[in-house]
Image 1 (cartoon, rainbow over the protein chains, first blue to last red):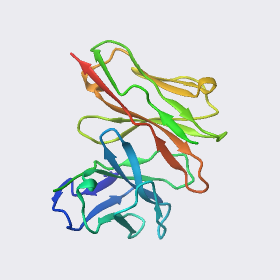
Image 2 (cartoon, rainbow over the protein chains, first blue to last red):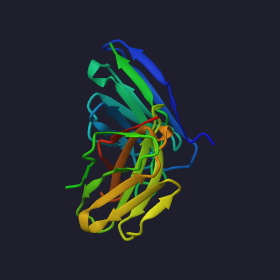
Image 3 (cartoon, chains in turn yellow, green):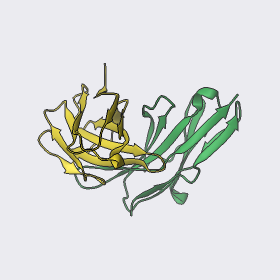
Image 4 (cartoon, rainbow over the protein chains, first blue to last red):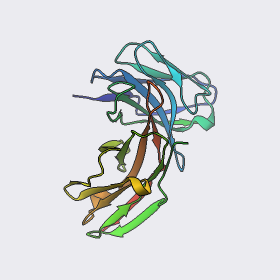
Length: 114
Length: 116
């Protein structure tokens, strides 16, 4: 049982390049989330999808777009990467938006923007 | 306002010592949930425990124990007889009842180093 799978694990981009981070879960969860983790800042929510077909902004959505492709997949796109977007990105899923179940996380994508 | 405070940024102990990681939260919700996650050096985030606001019983799982006290809005985590493998960043989080999509409010984490 893979859980939450993120690809790629590492990526280096040049400023201005675009990139899509992929996330897929096989736990039949309805809700999915994208976070970024920066030193001293903890985990900050970028976007989330409460259910298939819906997406909403989190704390730090600027510079990002998301697509909930189907129930399993939730992608994060950087249209024009900036050095400030250098971070570790985590995808997570949860049974449903109104449940009390924990979020399950992928292993993260380490993204560097030069 | 919903908030989680982990006042200890870094803790360093010697193996076999007991260590307590503090978590203080703020919420207006009467029903809420608290979580602890572990992030080892390899980077993944691992769920450890969930506790609801109506259950103030302490929980023990092996060398790990959690002390939930509503009176002080705290949900502290104790590792007994710490081991090097316990070295990690530990996050406390509060499930915020924001309508039909509850969000996690995260603390900034406590970095625990267990030295041999």
